[in-house]
Image (cartoon, rainbow, N blue to C red; front, side, top):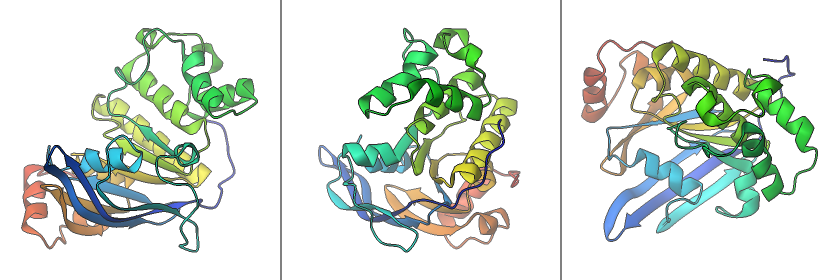
Length: 260
């Protein structure tokens, strides 16, 4: 990692009444939450609870049947980019769960990182690629390697670099470490924490792992059956100060988790 000056937080996120329907099935039903600029927000729940669908709806990969999604400035005012627009996607980037499947197997790291710059018409590709690799702890020697020549942790670092290269304000993290072994998980989580502080990023992170969420996130939302059942501070979850029985059952299922 290179030294970087900490910057003030950029944009936050406001979600009101989000509803996602697939062929008559309500996957997300009236979910609302806010993420302050520079804050990390977690979404937890069992498989099928709708947590990943929320992320996909935020970035335009799942259809919104209803609801408001808006980026917000430091004073709480909605920002201009329309969700799903090119300018919105420049500000909001997603890191997917599977580093093996999210990178094109026939493209070098250099091309993987250059592609979003070309799509958004950003100049200075050479310097931006070198900076992105440095920020995720990889040198320029990785530029012309293919994904199959990288470890799982290195691939996920490249996925993070691809998201960061557009200089977004908000990162959507869909189980970003679940495909990695425990030691590599810790490295990637610590990297994400450092980058958030250095860039003033906001995070929305989905995970089934309560320990991961309480390590990285300040606040979180618990989902069940497409609905929000509880929102609370990560410190309250770690201290078992929860209100809803479903949240308590998740804690029991993950007995022994500790906040890092």
